[in-house]
Structures are given as C-alpha cells and as structure tokens.
Amino acid sequence: MAIKTELKHSWIITVKEFRQLSRKKALMVPLFLFPIIMIIFFGYGMGGTVKNSPILIVNDDTGTASTSLVQEIGSYTAKYNEDPMFSTTYTKDMSQSEAESKIDAGLYKAVLIIPHDYSDRLAKNESVTLTLVTDSSDTTTSSIIVNFMRQLMARSGPVSLDIPNIYGDLEYLDFLTPAVIALTIFMGSVATTGSAIAGEKEDGTIVRILMTPVSRRSVILGKTTYQLILQLIRAVILILAAYFLVGFHMNGSWLLVALVLVIFTLGGVGMGIVMSTRVNDMESFFQLNLLVTLPSMFITGVFFPLSSVPDWMRYIAYLLPLTYANDAMRTIMIKGQGLSAISTDLIILSLFALITFSAGVHLFRREA
Image (cartoon, rainbow, N blue to C red; front, side, top):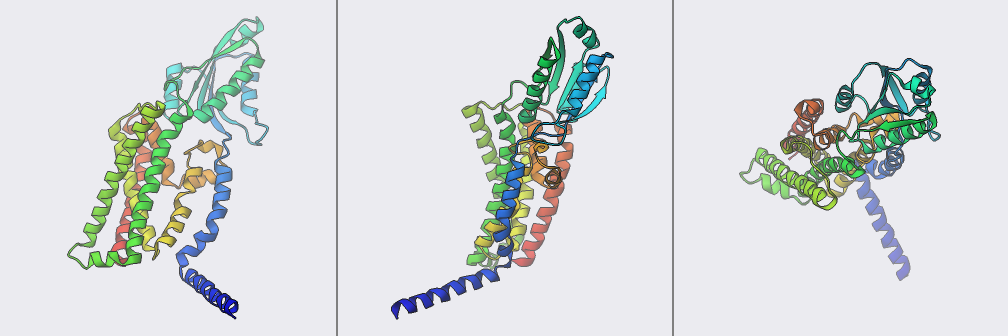
C-alpha cells in the first residue's frame, strides 16, 4: 500500500507540474521550438562554405588567354556546392589604389588585375604577374579566394600572384574578435536586463520598489546606466585580453567603437525589457531569451562570413541588428575606417535602439 500511495502522490505532483507549465504560455513555444531552430541554424550557419562571393576582374588584356581565365573564374563551382563560388564583375583600366578603395567600401571580396600583356607573355612562355587584392578582414573568404587563385594560376603556366596585405597580416582571430565583442554585448545586455526584471517580477521586488518614491522612469534609467557602464567595461576587457593574450591589434578609433557599443547596448536593454514584460518568471524569460538571441550567433557572420550561409538564412540575417554591429566593429577595428564607412550600420542600429527601447519603456510603465 505504501508503494501504491507513493506512486499516486508522485502522479499528482507530475500532473501539477504539467498544469503549471501549461499556464506559462510564453514558455511553451520556445521550449519545443528552440531545439529545432538550433539544429537548422547551427547546421547551415556554421557550414563555412563560400558561394557567389563578389569579385571584380580588371582585364586590360585583349588576348584569348585572359578570356579563358576570366571564364574559368566566373564558372567555377565547388564540388560540394551547386552555386558558383564567385559572382564576377568585369572592367578595364583600374589602378591598384582604386581596387583597394573598392575593397574598403565593401563592394568586392577581391579584385584581380590582369595586365595588358598577359596573353602575349604566356604565348612566349614568359613569366607574368597578376595582382590580387583581397578583403583580408574577412579571413575565411579571403583565404579561400587566395587558395583557389593560386591553384588556378599554377595550371595556367608561368603565372604568379602579387597579393598585397592592405590591412596587414591578419588571421582568423582578427576576423573573430570584433564580432565576439558585439555578440557578448548583445547577449549580455538582453540577458542581464531581462532576467533582472523577470526575477524582480517573480519575487515581487519590482512591486516593492515601485511602492517607494522611486519613479518608473528612474528605475529604467538606473538599469540602463548600469548596463552601459557594464557592457563598455566588458568590451574594454575583451579588447585588452585579445591584444595581450593573442596579439590582436586595434586599427581604428576607440571612440567609434564606444559609439557603436553604446547604441547597440541601448537596443539590447530595450529588447531585454520588452521580453521581460511578456513573461512572469525567470524560467520563461531564459527560454524566450535563448530562442531570440542564441541563433543570431550562427547566421550574422560572427564565426563565418555571411556568404557561407544559404540565401534564405542571409535574408534573415539582414533583419538582425547583430549583423550590422558585426560589420561596424570589423570596419573600425580591422580596416581602421571612420564614421562615413559605418554610417549605414549606425543608422540601422540607432533605429533598432529607438524602437526596442521605446517599446520597452512603454511596456514596462504599463505592466509595472
């Protein structure tokens, strides 16, 4: 009888837990949907392949050898992918400095300059040098392009490549560090803000705070100020750690980095507030937070370039603020460019911050 009674009580507890779960409407969807999303995004977003990478070919030669070379580059398809590896554009009479400016502007991942005597030199079996300018800030794509071009030139005869390092000698770590900082700030500001409010709602702290003379506006301002200071300190620590431990070099302006991170943090705080107002406990918030923030790391170019993900996933990436934060941070920290180069990213991040923060303040004042 004792065992039967224990089993009966256990079943009652089990039913009670399921009933509590069914009341947490905000928890139900992410609880079951999140693993599916992670499988899809992790599988496709971490693939590390390259396709339709934009390349400019400057062909000053009129011979048949250069024509064959251009056609081979434009039609090349990797064995693991049905799509062309490169999206090629053609022009003439462009200097190396002009090619570098195209790379700086983000228009192309590489520019191949074919000299005017390319076909004649090959016909005479003389050595000839082509110039390949690459966006080495994207170390993954740049390495793939360089390796392909070297293999192709080795089959073309006595052809060599001149590959200037316009951003210095970069490694994968240089590509990774700016995006990891942006990812850390994004996930940190959303999670810490939202979990704090959700936890205070769950244990009743927020109600007790609002019963004091402290206004809702003061609560939001205090939490926002805390996040801005905390996330900037985290960013500085990450940059210094990357510099002293692994040799990362900061090429751009610290002030511009701070500007991007402040705007991005405001957006993250706003998103955290919005999410916390939609739930009533910490468990629901953490599930919702994982559903919203974690997949971002796989499709916004944190670990691999956007060219490595499927087209449908890239369209989603362009809707996510982390994509533009990654681009802005790399443009500043690796390329060393100024405000004009990240103006589009800043506009989008500012809109994200304005919308989410305004919505968060409105919902908090209504819910609290």
